[in-house]
Image (cartoon, rainbow, N blue to C red; front, side, top):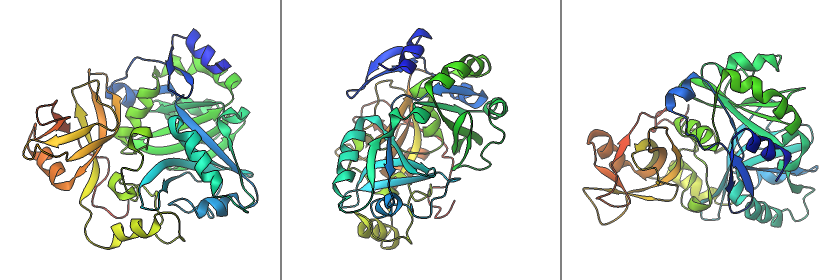
Amino acid sequence: MNNWNQFLLAQGARSADTGTADIADFGTALSVAQLQDGFVAPVTDQGLIGVNGDDAASFLHSQLTNDVEHLNQEQVRLAGYCTPKGRLLASFLMWRNATTVYLQLSRGIQAPVQKRLQMFVLRAKAKLHDASGDEANQVILGLGGKHASAVLPQWFDSLPATPFSKVEGNAGTLLRVADAFGLPRYQWLTSAANAEAIWPQLTEKLAKGGNDAWHLSEIHAGVPQISQATQEQFVPQMVNFELLGGVNFKKGCYPGQEIVARSQYLGKLKRRTTLVSIADAKAVAGNELFAVSDPQQPCGMIVNAAANGDGGVDALVEMKLAAIEEGGSTPGAVRLGSAEGAAVRFLAMPYVLDALDL
């Protein structure tokens, strides 16, 4: 276990086995109100792939759903990695510096995704490595809410002005990701030594959360993440990826590109991802949902779920548009696991589902 994990355990975190690594995590769930007020959370369940070399950007450009060749050092983007059938194998938060393109993804799928990407490098001058051990990226702190932006200027001369942008400083890299509750959210990547030094000052002013707190903020921002439980389940539009800027329809070919484009331009999309609350703490990604009006077949699937501080979970769920409409107008019309399961309560999304351009 690394020094940062040991530090977190000394601060009251618990050890959690993810199947690929032991991580430290604060188990106490934060409420939506606490997220809105201001929070900080060590994000310990994310993996990070670094891609170096003269052809790093062009290689990734040919593999991912988004434009990598024109990604500059002030930008952050979402990107997907699909099978030839257009189904998502992974979703990435992507950024770069002068030498490296970084791909952040669920730690549980990092090794196989990295291995698969490496298979297609062939003669390209690109090399992939596990970047989570790089000194500058050892620690990820997630911050958000009303008071987060007031705390950060203590360490950064300026903050990223818009969602999906970044700044670099002596204290590390600060990524601004999608807003939640109309408020900025950030990922701060820094060394373990710096994180340990600043942790007391952050937790003095912000509520202390863990991985669930960060993922709850992601869910309320409407940003999905593909995990082991949901690989190869969705084309990008099913999880709203093009609404979030994660698909570039003008770039060249990549695996699954023809099907992704066909889903966009031919016919009408019949499935989307929306935000719900479920009064069952055991609900997890991959669980199926059922409409009471059609109990014989699932109408959707949980993409991501996180404890909401009220004894249940809030979740992003992918489902038929008809079920979203029915569930939004009729309480209890959609349920978890079966037509007799826990009721699914539909919440307002932070963006319009049928919009083509945010």
